Image (cartoon, rainbow, N blue to C red):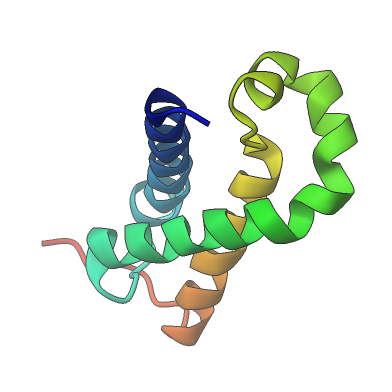
Length: 103
């Protein structure tokens, strides 16, 4: 695996984590522990865990649906998104599922 491939994988992980954090922080208006940056860090951890845990179950369907990304970089976007969503959801529940206050 080359250096450029690793950079692409990291960029995809960051994009997935940013999308999930934006869903919770901006669209749902939920208060995340540490704000947007804290949610982003938890989402990145969730992407990595989801990628390695769920990839065993969803790799074949992901290859059919997202063939160009899975074959090119080895990143499974479906499992990454599910892992990040689960991590941010759990963080939100641990933070008492509070609505974010408007400043």
